[in-house]
Image (cartoon, rainbow, N blue to C red):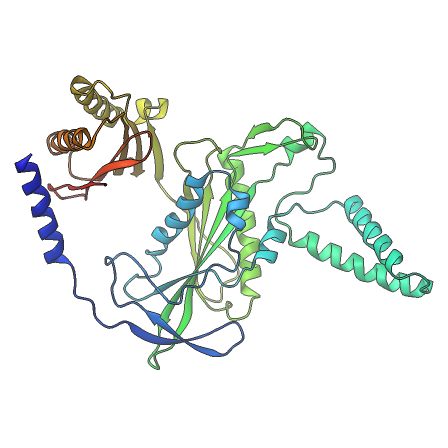
Length: 418
């Protein structure tokens, strides 16, 4: 135990000595939505060279909340945002650009983009319904007035329908039509990247757009009825996603101030709602300022893998075997152990980060410390250091402790929670 405490103190001293000194925060000027200039702050402290600094006061996304309503898996929500920021670093250097959540695609616009396009019959029905409401609230008007209003309503309905990016469907109660015309698009994520000018103001100099596409379409044929599921082939998803991306780019170029900025567009493939691992970005493309057409798409060779799983057994057997051996070592000394659940992040089939969760039933803080100490020793002995490693030790009630080791380091950090 003494040796363990010495290791912890040593790690803390190293972290303290490496922490950079905080300089004064930078005060910058930024235009708000009303074109008036406001003072903002850019923190001088950057957590690391590959992390963006964020302009304060923090402005939430103009479409805040939409993603939660559209994507069923919390892991997908987090990975879509973090993954897009990670890929943006290739286009917008974190040492030169500041990060801000999307401010151009607002909530109302987003919901319209995510809807289904209407058929001619549905347009006619929507117009008649709106006109009926108008007649009831405006009795006694002339036939010419009604004709003018009908024309206005029809233009409005057709405009809203034209904004929708999901395919039309004639009959939502038809299982065949639902499966032939799934809602492919779940969400569109916008991120903004700004630079500081000589006059101490900041301006938008880059934008990233994530297009979230379903891998499984969940639907009903009647309100309150059972849910049905349709797998969406990845090639079909990509075809539809690229078509949607081109439409989104053209719309962005028509927005004020966005005609001449470079744009990164990436297509994200969601996992099914119950998946314990998130989906991932599959292709991306960079569009130069002023360009209205997407050129070449680049494949993104990354993936999340669950341990244990058939995919891990088939594609990453050595890593799967290492985790099994690690679990066997724990089981030999701790009778309350029930198993290890792992998540691996791979790029070009090379493990970048491994996260392990160990659920255990503890009867006291001493048992937590002892188990953490033993696990720390296994980490040092068993796991190679070419990837990030995170181990979360949990009881039924909460996270009890965790161990983190950065790639290239031989000194894991240990935290025991009180």
